[in-house]
Image (cartoon, rainbow, N blue to C red; front, side, top):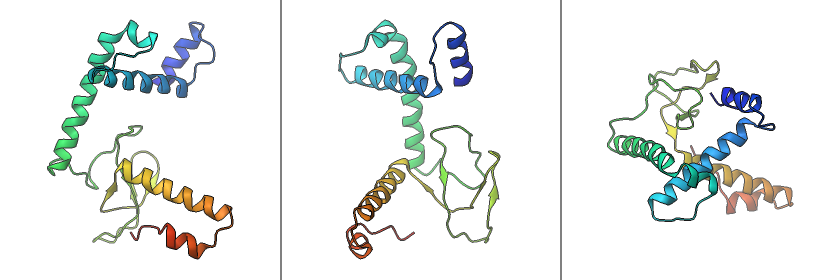
Length: 159
């Protein structure tokens, strides 16, 4: 959908339009809508022009995310191997390697890639935490810090 939007913008004379730029602008407007709901009135001109409709659009999105979070915390919406993962969704669960009871080695998912079967998924915050940990370990290693010291200071999770 973003590809079509970018192509339409290029055809209309907006040169230099990229998917990344459009996605970045949408995220920026989403943040401004959230700030508006909490009472912060400092906004960009792009937001002020369409303020009412943007607040309504992103409020609906946030309500949907809140409901999903509540259902997940109550155990009603826990992902399973049989659940359908929407390709391209930023909120789709990430399947990681792990032990499972039926000893399946891999499972074909309809995105065209093969992912390892798993009995759990990682939250976005945990993925970010692990990424930062690995990046910090790599930076220390590049600076010549011995691996024993790195392992002692920044141990990897045992999963």
